[in-house]
Image (cartoon, rainbow, N blue to C red; front, side, top):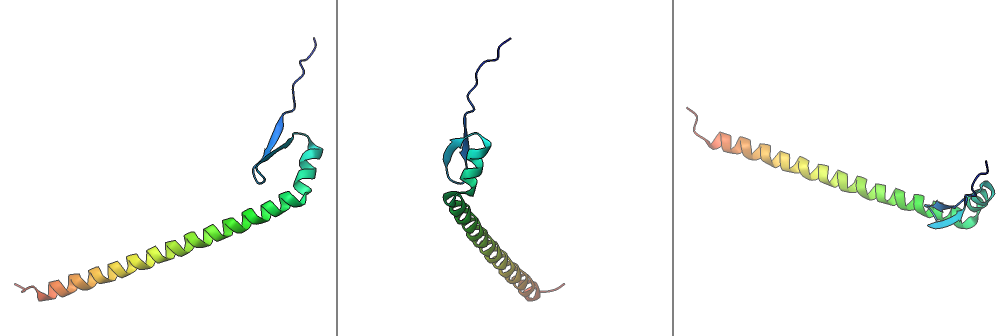
Length: 86
């Protein structure tokens, strides 16, 4: 029985946003190329920047919540002290 011809298709490179031939030599050549390496470097730098921004925002939120809690406890004890005791 004969087998049907099937196209190899193309492989999508997420980093470069392009299609390349789906064979090992083309994939290797692409991944060793300067364009791909530059795009990987840019992507990693962008990820680091985004993570730093998220960490900064998380710390700011935590500090704001701590300040709110401190004010809440202070007001609780001030109003409790101002109330007449039985």
